Figure 1: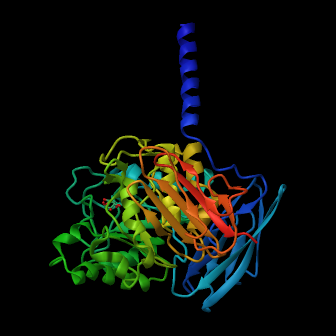
Figure 2 (figure 1 turned 90 degrees about the vertical axis):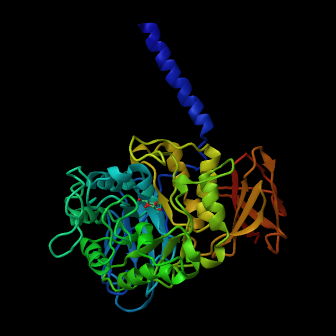
Figure 3 (figure 1 turned 60 degrees about the vertical axis):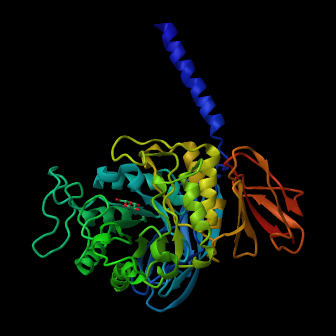
Length: 508
Ligand code: GLA
């Protein structure tokens, strides 16, 4: 008995140590002093409700202040949550956030741009799809909001807590929780019994300084066969706004039965319609087109009123030769750099890292994703460089140290959220390698050297290729460390399916 116990304990120890070696944590731990993260520029529409929680690491309690905060907005100095109304006067409001705790002080400029453009930087948050699918409930959404704060993700700028498919009624489902009448007598859409109080749910999310997202589609049914918005577009959108949602994913799916053909006109029609409605709502609602890239949606998604559009099929169902699916989505998306910019982002789908539900399976507990540590760093680096919306879709209640280290590196997120709003361009690509370069607002460039091959390889990028004038200053973004002595050419050895992610300045 005693021996067996000892064996069990020692096996557990070995397993933990091995796992730690396999999954190295690169992101340095944040210090005790405050450090303010998140976007430096933020779009909002005049007179609308505003909610923003200043993302900040460091020990609590902390005291926040904001210089020159417009009088229609109010700050909770203990939580750093700003609420109130967006000023009615169009223009830029340049404020400075400040946070103080017993270990120090931090400040960070923040420009609130009041006008018509939302999502001046890519939206960040969590979407339940790859963890819960048709198991999603109000309780799990609230738990996710709790965990976004508790895990520290919100301290890095994760903000939206989004429900995907399966919150509505599934008309013919025998399960009394799901089936029944999908609309009330006046035609208003009803949630299923797992969502007893939609307004209460968004209020719960908003009370934490976070924003809430919802999902429907232009067809009669969603992809999972639940009630969708065909012929109810206007009333559904108004209902979502009245419930308090801040983000709408609009998923094509059964609209294929409605569309007359595959023409651009038919493909655009439902998005033009919903985009027009969303623009007239009295809330700032991000409009996320989900039609998997058909008819080059990146060319017209913004004209419909969309702030982001899926450029690919579902990342959870993809494969590329011997490579995991995120490379397939990433490589399609990487070619579309010219179409991205502030308020208009290419969306290669969610971040499925850490633990998540199994892609093709509807039920069952989350399991560890089949990606190596190098692959998970590559995934996050690619999404960061491509200015992709950063939506984690894994299990919030199974976030371990490794997964959080991938999701929450302030310098990786700074590249993604950079105010210039450029998507990285492909500098070089072959079967074995991909080099992405993203110009940043301060004149520096973020560079990702991705090894797509099966063996480690030496990779390189030179000053000439980057078209940078003087000697270089190079910083390792994951490790947050200067690479002294690299001034002309950066030539790291990169593990198979790994990445070297650096930020490069001209040396002063
Ligand atoms: C489609 C979308 C996914 C998800 C599911 C829900 O497959 O692309 O992101 O929303 O529908 O059924």
